[in-house]
Length: 102
Image 1 (tube, rainbow, N blue to C red):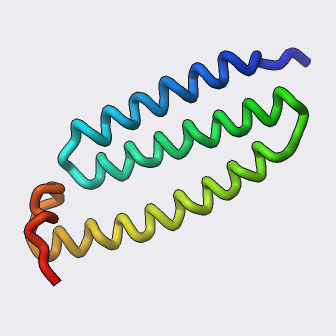
Image 2 (image 1 turned 90 degrees about the horizontal axis):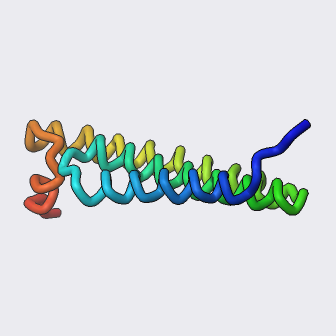
């Protein structure tokens, strides 16, 4: 069974991370910002898995499981904040969140 070279996996991970970072910087919609964060987390997970596969270690897969659990927690908290922001301001624009005061 042929395997993918580690350089290809890391190159794809870097491209995905760059796309997520650009989406994070450019977008003002909080839902798109959360999706960009998810792309960045998946890129980091892909880098861990491809490096772990290169050295035949399961460490990369274990780290990916931690990344998945962190992404699930981020989605839960992020969507709760989006719902609260939309309920209060009737928009999901990130600039409206700067007006929030406790």
